[in-house]
Length: 262
Image (cartoon, rainbow, N blue to C red; front, side):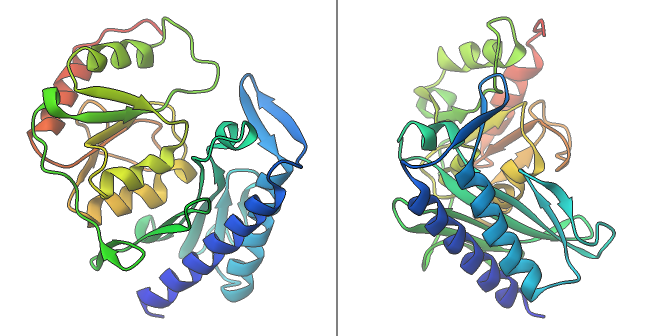
């Protein structure tokens, strides 16, 4: 099967999941997964909709979703990685910055990635070796190479403490960059791909948070590593994604010099 067929399926599933989220808005039940970590009826319904569509079309594929873990053919050649609601806390509070994130990998190699913003009806898409797009417009990362001029974004783990290493990283970047954002959604990797943010970092991610976004960044001309410049692994919680300019090295040096006290 061609990549464009997988990409089309991912987009259809993401849009279907997004419709579920819009339908649940303002009328969902909420429960806690852990301190400051929420799950809603909307998450579960969106994931079921996405899973049923993808596995109905590709029954031999594996499926890794945030709300239910691994399902279906864990040892298969292909695996879908899905976050049915990236930015749950935003969603619960009516903040219109959340998304559906879907990626497909083959033997650990990313093939397609889609991040869909149902509020704005924006669909960010990428396929390995074929580029990245916002709807039908090609995406390219920014060319900012100085941290002084950079708009950088991060995410914190649920229940972050003031002495956590992530907070030290945040403060170091805050005083040296043009500005830092914390949006509450790892889907802002799509904004790095689109050149809106110059870099994104976190040390508390899961595969479903980043699988689609790292492909978008790569296909838009950016770079992804661990936060100290080491090789990026999808199972690792640490990620630095940037436009790939000298800015990347500046940030890795800044993070490497942090001792931190977890």
